[in-house]
Image (tube, rainbow, N blue to C red; front, top):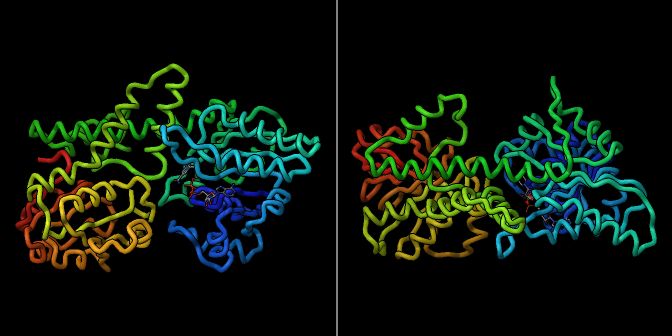
Length: 440
Ligand code: NAI
């Protein structure tokens, strides 16, 4: 099939590449000329495991191309994915300007039948707006052609995006007409693996499904974070509580890990957007508002622990920081808890020596030439001249460090662990003070 993907970011690039990998002819469009240049020159603008080789393979096979030409892109695909960003507006609602702009550019150039697929995470009712924007443009040009608008939210996880797209648990498709439904069946047939993964529904339900999924996951995290804070006060151990409840199949183990707050480009903005949509619909979501408030507070938990141990004034102190990305296996720092911690430490006069396996370049882009932030080459190098160690991302390579060596390097041998990576007895046996989240 001929497919166009509008917006070549995390979702667009992964979706386009995976669709090419099963044999489709894919053209990816982006307004960011630099991104397209990097891709055309054989590079890759983001870090995502397995993606680079896949992009190369499909480019070489001639099934995957990149362009900045809207005209060429719209002419190419019978299926036009919209995978542009939907960042939060000032009031928390999803900013749809990029989605509408993409829809308009389709309307401005299309000549024959297309299925326009909303892959971006968008509020209920967006498909209607996309439909109207295209109708507007067609009318202005005096062109009369059929088209369908489909909602197909994406559930991939950064860090496992290729795997998730190639082997989805489910594919949600919101569709209103038979022609588009048939094309979506055909499109996703290669990803079905043994049993039907397509869940077909109406457009509005599909749009809501994406927000409901992220809201539920964020709720589990905030719930566990609050319980962890309580466990600390009561002298209980949240890790034991987690196992005690996770073993109940009605609850399950996923997303029960307490820590220093969730971040990333999805949970924070999607929770906010759903709260906003609900308010506009006159149906408040009290639980979800609290989920967000609790998460905002949780991002300060490590800074609070550091201040409680070292005092308010951190001038002259250097904090070693393991992790910058909002989670492992990505270089994404959008809404990352590390950013709140870095801000709090700077405010109190501290310097930071950070190590992240892939996100240092992203931190450099965010913090520029900030003299108080140095980048280390490896985890132990981050400890050079440092007073204490703080951990904010659960990268695999942090899981089994040499605690004796950490103790020898730190001026004050303390670890503040925002991801509960260690059994407390182990760093303590090496003579380290160890603070985690919700543990004795
Ligand atoms: P991103 O910011 O990485 O990529 C968006 C891309 O769209 C950018 O490269 C931008 O230059 C481009 N763009 C903007 N307007 C354009 C236009 N008119 N024409 C062509 N290109 C245009 O965003 P990301 O992370 O890929 O997210 C995209 C959507 O997918 C969002 O709605 C997000 O909520 C959703 N999503 C993101 C997931 C993630 O893990 N990042 C997972 C599931 C959904």
